[in-house]
Image (cartoon, rainbow over all chains, first blue to last red; front, side, top):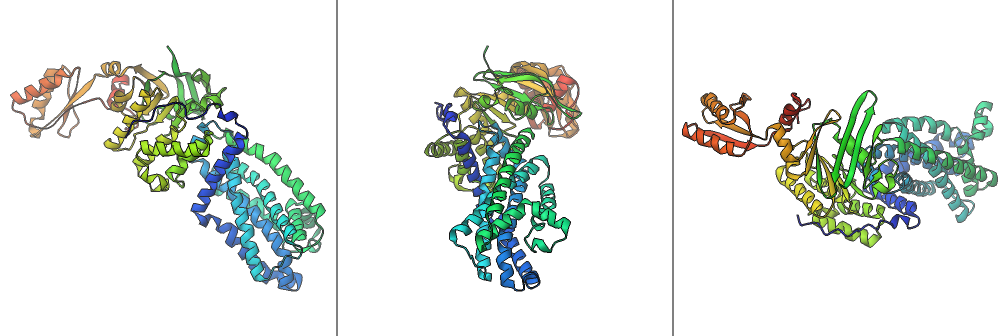
Length: 270
Length: 314
């Protein structure tokens, strides 16, 4: 091996004072996550195949019974499935991060002069690609089945962004679980335990009016219901304002509560 | 004396296990400190504390005069860490790994790429730079890992068993790099299970066992304590093992040890003893198939220092 080049400082020691250091570091680490996802696209199966299976099952199993026609049912179901899929996609962030953090490369990140939260923010941002893939594949498949946006391009886009924003915010809760729990499988176990009542205990597969009182009470306070109602309203018409406001408020609350807790748990995890 | 890093009375416990029971380590700027010890001695724990990855339960450590707990962010700008297990991302290419670290060290895009290319060249990884690290051999991974810890040209470099599991040629490459780093003005903490490695690279050696430093000195001082070198003889005719042992006893004045595989060994105090052994074996016409002069193994160092063999065979 050749001798190492002489050592005038390459690293600008004061460079950390350059503005937006945390943002730059997080984006560099998000790029890492993105590269990893692209290298193993099979990781995207949960956000591509799973929603398609749900849509097919529900539409043909329940469509006739609930809405009288499979097409009508698809129109109300698909915006909700989109929300469910992105929320499930957020769980994968926690699972992946839990597996990732045990590897030596996280030791290196910890030994670098970067913000403690940068590796977490990077992973969560990098996983935005999962939501985008989920939404796009679901919309493509839905339109093949006959789903039609009844409002317009912009409201439909807003529905997609709202679903993604909500999933992104909630994913911090799964990141927190991923930092506290030792095994990736345990993160998934906890995740499913929370996500089934959270995503199925909604107006997704049946109108809330038809539910027994106790379940209806849950559905009405469930944050995911608000996101689903807002998405539905934005894509196929109906009231939006109240449910969208609730969805945004819940999103803000989730980030405000779970992101700092997740970062704290990460710092404590040696 | 100016120390590049200094640890005093480091204690670290995990539940009822004590990983470090009061460890002092220090290296002057521009020198190599060898930390020699078996698996589980606490070497990695000490390195992790000095690298700001762990907080000590008691004691303190400084790097460049800055406390590793209170001033962790500033300490991180001065250090490079190469862990025992390669701390690079397997899914990324070698180039992507190094560029990522450059970006995290605030290099602008073009400079990060230039620095990565420079390091890949220095570590003979240019051709492999575009391949995912999971396709690399063990030696290539270690080299990339080492390169990754040098992106920011750190003043203090921690190498945690950088050659464990490498074949001798690959090990020589790493040794060469360590010498180049020190020639460049860096200070290196090197943990190892091999006295030979510590002897070849370190200016001073701290021997650790069960979370304590049980000996400290220059390689020469340490070798004096542990009896310097060992002569090993394997007679061509196993029946003449006793005669060979007698020769070794005469020359060294110590009782030779036979490991039972047709080999007899004895510690000797100086290089001259070896010549004398050769001469006497020849005079008695004892043909040998193996004859060597070597530094004591870690186990022998421990036996000399503690009267016990290492619990975990190195």
